[in-house]
Structures are given as structure tokens and as C-alpha cells.
Length: 477
Image (cartoon, rainbow, N blue to C red):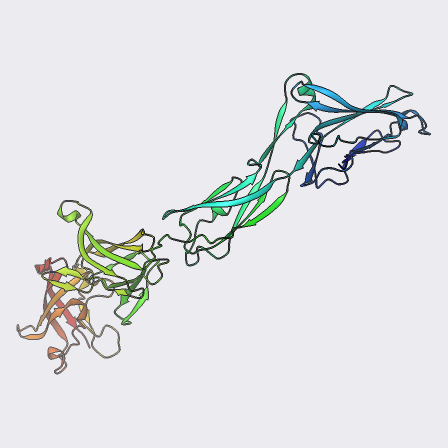
């Protein structure tokens, strides 16, 4: 059997009372982490045993400028159990010393070499720790459910984030003086972007210092293989890629919302906005950005606070579809008919997305607030000038003070003699105003004072026909 020789190299520089411990084949060199005591040195060898441990005498610099007197090298190894320094080798009358480890013996441990001059009382002591880092990754196991994916890396040794290091002096005093050398990181990388399409996923799972990681909030949305890179306490890096693909089974609901703009007669994206407006508040929903799903259930509920504070427990519409590109238009029941929009109140819309293959279900919801009906008297102007200059040409609700959430409005205008000169009965949002002509299409009426009566009904079925909506308006040209 081939005999392995391991050497600590101790370099002592003439005319300098210092020396450095060296192991030329070491992969890592680092200090110990004692508290206030003198630090020793640690030599680490990755997947190999050290080849040489050598000490060269230079103490002669303090006693003999010619460096003619040899030294004695006493090699010892720390015995943790007996709290002793066991002599393993002594070499005398030499200017350097090599310690060879017994074949098949224990290599790792704490070593001390004392260098003593034969012609003086001078001596020096050097201490080192030897670690053979055989850390490796055996594989990655995983568990997968609708809420998360748990990845666990199997390593040998199992614990790679801490190693015990002992203080020689405390051990010899029977204190065992154990210190823990800590470190190590773990980084995970999927083969694809497992959260593509999600605005701000929580990616804290990717880095850590434990054997396992949990991917949730949200869980993986796309299937992928995973590569894990582990850096142990000694700085050794190992990577491992799963030979299999971890299937994504979680459903991810994403609601797209569009709001109708009557002036532009078009829809605009409102997915990231507060859904608030006045009746008839028109919205449409789609689930075409849902991920890893194939069935969808929409449900709209109304807040019944006005009926005793029951919360959002009153369903107003339900829609179920398996079409990825379906557009959902909520239908609101109102006075025995179905409206394409929301009347005053508070609503919640919930989208439930289902992965029928895995059985995973998840949901998301939006709050909708529709202003209650209101009609203030200052919404009615007291004068207008129908002269064609596009400024104040109509008797109509004052801009910025229009009635809110009104369904119907009846407007009657009379001259000083009591004759009806204008009438409108219909939807409030369709009233274009009085242009100063007889019944809006006849001859221009003269300047003067005219009298109006306005009756209104809100989308909440409240009537607004009090005397405050009777008054006078001045027509100027």
C-alpha cells in the first residue's frame, strides 16, 4: 500500500522573530475564530489528503547569525478525549522537519510543532487545524402540493454549515474550549422562469443556508428542473441539477378588469386601479392571464349593510366557463330586469381558478364601490348664453356638480306666462341640455327669465322631486 506523506511547511525568516505556517497543497486557508485568544490557522483540502507538512528552522536568527546550530522539532496532536498533546514525532539536530502520517491513520485534527534551539532556551510553537473536506451532494428530493414546492438537498456530511474547532489551551485545561466555525450558503436556480407573468413574486426562496427551501407566495407556476449550488463552511462549491422536472400543479388566478368610458365609447384597462365610479358603472372581466388553469368560476356579491350589515353575502351574478379567452360582463338585477353594469352600492367580484388535472384551486377578488345617488341644487345653473360661442350654450347640469348615479331625470321649462317651452323625460346620462330654442328644435326664444321644474330618480330608486329643484334661469344672448 502506498504511504501518504503530509507536510506542514513552517517558514521562518532570518532576523525576524515571526514564522508562517504553510501547506502548499491546501485548497483553502483561513483563521480560527477564537474570541480574544491568538488565532491559529486552518488548512482545508477538498476531496484529497494533504501531501506534505514541513517546518523549517529559523530560530537561529535570535542566537546564531550563522545559523549553524540545529533545532529539535517536536510534533504533537491534540487528543480531545484525554485532553492531552500526544507526541507523534520528534526530529533533532535538523534545520527542517517533515512529519509523515501513518498510512490509514486519522489525518484530520489539531497539530502543534514546537521548535527548540539546541544552543539556547529559545523556542517557538505553531498550531494548525487540518480538515479534509469531502462534502458532496447526493441528490435533491421534493414534495409538491397546491400551496408550495419543498426542495431538499441531500448532502454528505449532512451538516455543512458548521464545524467544531477547539482551542488548544482550553482543551489542555480540561475546558474543551470548543468553538464553532459557521458559514455556508445554498442557491437554487430553476431551468425556466417559474413565476413568469407574476408582477412581483417572492423570490426569497432562492438563497439560504439550510438544506431545504420552500417556494410559495406563489408556488411554482411552470414546470422546471432545478439546479442547486451549495457552498460549505470551507468555501467548497458543488452544483447539482435534478435529472427530472418538477411539475407545476398550482392554479394562479389573475383578474383583468376593464372599465367603460362613455365619452370615448371604449374600454380601458383598470386592473390596477381602485374600482370606483357612479352608476351605471360598467365593467368587464377576463381571466386570459390566469396561469396553469383550465376552469374558471366568477361570482359577484353585494354588500348588504343597508339590510342589516350582513357583509358581501348576497350573490348578484355567477358565471362559469372553461374558455381561456372568455370575457365576463356582470349582470346586475334591478327592478325585475338585468342591467349591464352596477347600481349604487358595494360589491366584490371573486375569480376562482381551477386546475382540473391536479385539483388545485385558488381565487382572487376585487372591491367595487358605486357612488350612491345624490342631487344637489347647485348642480342647476341660474343662467346660460346660447349664442353659439361654445361657452355656456346649454342649460344643463353644471360641470363638476352633476347629479351622481341618477337613472332618470324629467326637465320642464316654462316661460313667464306658464307656457311649456322645453321638456325632457329620460335617462339622466343621456340628457344633452336645453339650447334656448322652443322645444329644442324650434325658433330661438328671447332673452329673459324662464322657470324650470326638475324631477329625478336615482339608481338607488330614491326620488329627487322636492321644491329645491324648482327655480328660475336667465337666458342671455
